[in-house]
Image (tube, rainbow, N blue to C red; front, side, top):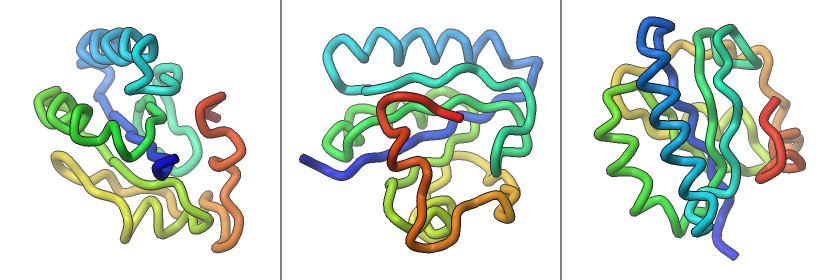
Length: 125
């Protein structure tokens, strides 16, 4: 099995309709398995994410298909692996599409602990 990944798609509230349309597109991709989980639109700060966002879960093997969709969406996106180092996942191991968002790193799990691993493919926050 290839490595688990997250993508966080950030949107200003005035662009929520674009985020909703993208979310529906990803939900349709769960049927074929390219996307394993699509989170809820979060119109407020959640965890380290200080602005509205939603997340998708997928395996690394789906990245070549998903990355062009994320690059074309016009929203800011953080793509990162899901490892046992939550801080590294969201910083040094992450890749940004568009302008990076200043994350609240104080909410992330310490190295060796990552609550996101247990939630992978099942739930977001």
